Length: 261
Figure (tube, helix red, strand yellow):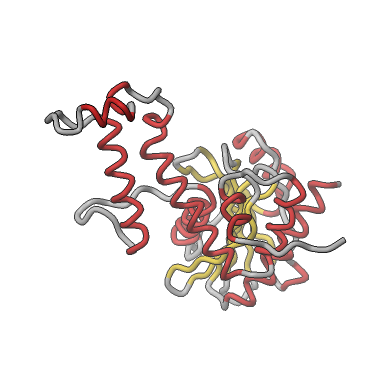
């Protein structure tokens, strides 16, 4: 069977969730092996989510009579106040220009990240708070593994498997449930016994479909985030991206294997 090259139309269709199952899987495989394109697609998805968050309620309304094309032509010279639709269209243009330039509406705060970007930000936040903590970095320790699994499943209404990173040189310390804007999430922590800690963050996703692994960074802390099987995951640590990527691949392999099993 001849493999069709991945086109820009395929990437846009992936973002808009318009691809069939076969093509969707082909695009995910392509993005997994092209991290630069995956970052660009993640940006597309973030723009789409920002627009939906800002104007979703307006978009669901019926088109008002004053935007009927023939009526607009007939009344084009008549002065009239701006409608909600007109303001929404103008704001959409401003938002698009702002995102392309790295900011929008000078003096205004950007919209909160959504989707996989939000999961990445939440993981960084968990690391900032609990990563340096030498007294109580986790609430439930590794010795209570089963209790942690049960507590997590009850709080998130979704089971989350605990990966084993011993082969990668990291000992499982335990975890805790942490709050996010989208509801509770779980944080699992690992340590190499030399001061380097790895944090895995996971929570259920309400709308976004599976997304391939994308890199993120915050200062000296790097991260990889992805969505699979209705859960958003992010792995963060103060280590080189290549080394962290290998651990993230192992985490995803174990999670996928446990989900299938």
